[in-house]
Image (cartoon, rainbow, N blue to C red; front, side, top):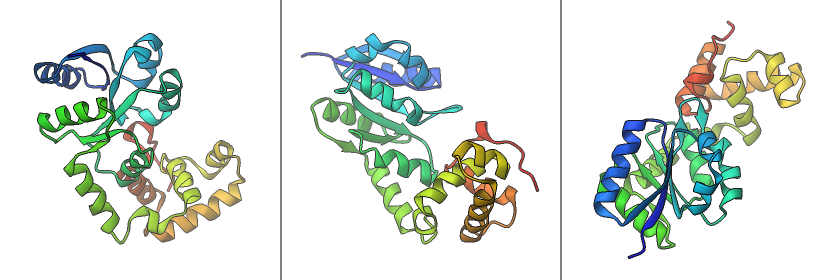
Length: 220
């Protein structure tokens, strides 16, 4: 049987090694490469070109894999991608689902589920684990789901303001005026029920609009 050429991007080395070892016990597997970040994987384009399937953690410390994904796809358009996630943050989860990649598993899934995912995706099928499907349904049932409260533009602005940036800083980053950012800030806070910059930042962090590594202490 032809081995599956696997590439893994996971920022915890022990988790990375455990996954590869467990898969090797159950599948004909050839490791094309193992990297701690998307940026690191991009320094090895030949490994990306050789891989059939990539297991990718969504959150990689300060990096989110979304930043590296377009270039990974450019290097190997036929590479089949399986998200691995432990996130409970609905924005990050929804953003990953919208990319409609070949596979999606939760890190709490049994190893047998990951084996099935790799087998099916490598054979040209799509796979989403039961726990991921349940999480998606649970998020969608929430009356305060962010998509029901915020427009796409407001979601983008919240991702910046949630880092703790002042209006002027966010305006420069987004190419808007400080007054426009202030107006969006007021509207967003009203819709999510936040009464201070700290509460806005807490919401952004809990829902996955930003990460702890990107936070700064907000102004009062």
